Length: 229
Ligand code: DC
Picture 1 (cartoon, rainbow, N blue to C red):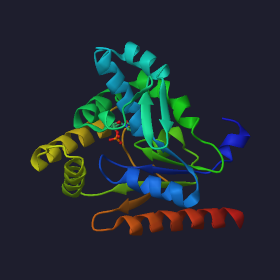
Picture 2 (picture 1 turned 180 degrees about the vertical axis):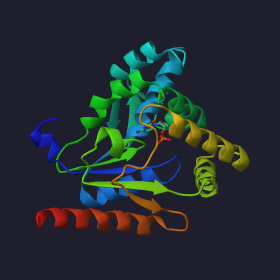
Picture 3 (picture 1 turned 180 degrees about the horizontal axis):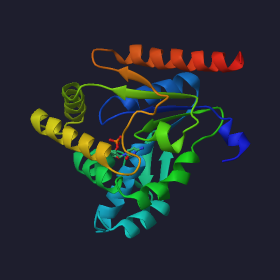
C-alpha cells in the first residue's frame, strides 16, 4: 500500500453470517458515493469454482492457486466467474458452507488479500466481511462490528430465501448458522472477532435505516474529529 491508497477512507463492517452486513454496507456506500466490497463473495467464488472443477475443499494449494487466478468481475450488482453469471449461484447455503471451509485455509486467505485491498479507491470504500477491520484494512477510518442474535439472523435468512422462492427450514438454518459461526470464530487465521478499536452495534430490534444512520453518524464524527486534530 502506498501513501495515496492509505489516504482513501475505509469503513470496515464485520460480523457473523446474516447479521445484515451486506445490506448496511451497500446502503452506507451508496449514501457516501463510496465503492463497496463484499469480501464473502470472493470466498464463495473460490468455493463455487472448486466445486465446478471438482477440486477438493481441503486441497489448500490448489484452492490457493484458484483464489489467486480467480477470473471474477463485479458489474452493476452482478457477479461473473469466468464470464458466467453466478450472482444467485454463490448465495446458496451450499456455497456458503463451502466458502466457510475454504476461508479457514491460510493460503487461500493470503491469496485473496491483495485483491481485496485493490478495492480501496477514491473517494472511499465500505468493506464488509469477517476480518476487514482486523486484517485487511487495519487502518480503516471506522470499524463496526455488527451483531444480532442467532434466532433473528436465521429468521432474516429464512425470509431472504423465501423471497427468492427457495425452500428452507428455519430450524435447519439456525443449526447451520451456529455451525458456521463456530467455524468462522474458531479458525486459527483471521477468525471472526471484534477489532479492539471497533464499535459494536447490535442490530436486534433495529431497522435498517436506524443502523445505516448510526454508521454514518459514527463515520462523520470520526472524520470531523480527525480534522480538528
Ligand atoms: O459473508 P458471507 O456469508 O458471504 O461469507 C461466506 C463465508 O466466507 C463465511 O462463512 C466466512 C467467510 N468469510 C471470511 O472468512 N472472511 C471474510 N472477510 C468474509 C467471509
